[in-house]
Image 1 (cartoon, rainbow, N blue to C red):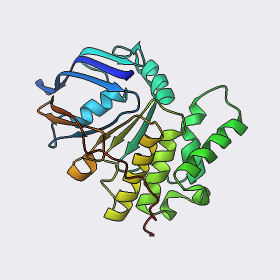
Image 2: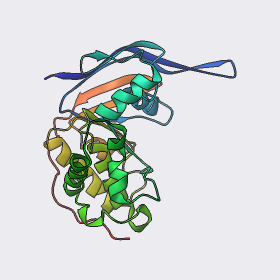
Image 3: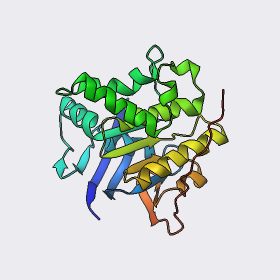
Image 4: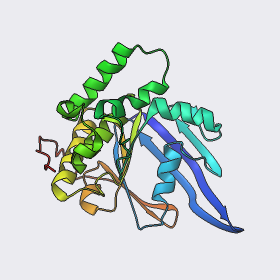
Length: 243
């Protein structure tokens, strides 16, 4: 397998009111292209901090981070933002859609930060990813007109629109009922089948087992890293709950 991400002895320390808190402690991790990872553990164990570092939203205090053979551990904020916009797709628990933009405009947003693409090319790409998440029929609607599951599908489309090297999902089903959660997880299954690299933070053991590789954290350290021998595709069409 080909390594996409390599973390070497990554630590992250936060200083607040002269108190030093070590959120991550000597993390070593290789994520290969095409893997579907779940990241679980108790609240406060460092999952979100690790995801922030993987997504270049923050930098490590110590250690090395290579993304697609490039050392990204000590880049400036602007350099991180450029790579983030080109190579990383984010899916958040709270959807993070912009309320006064349509579905189409929300999905198109990441591409507006890139130069050199014509309006025709950008619009074609948006249409492509909306079709992939089965939301083309809602492209002119606003987020408030969608169910939670539909909003999360739009968020997934937005994450896909820049053809990212990896999709980082932070509790993507946390705000959804069971039917919509299952539909979104099946979408992730299909994306993995299609070759996407995914890292998903989740508290739900059943969701974690959907992944091909299961990581567990405790007190800022990786304590388990298991290949899921029972992993199998769950991908199949599921009707989203209305409302």
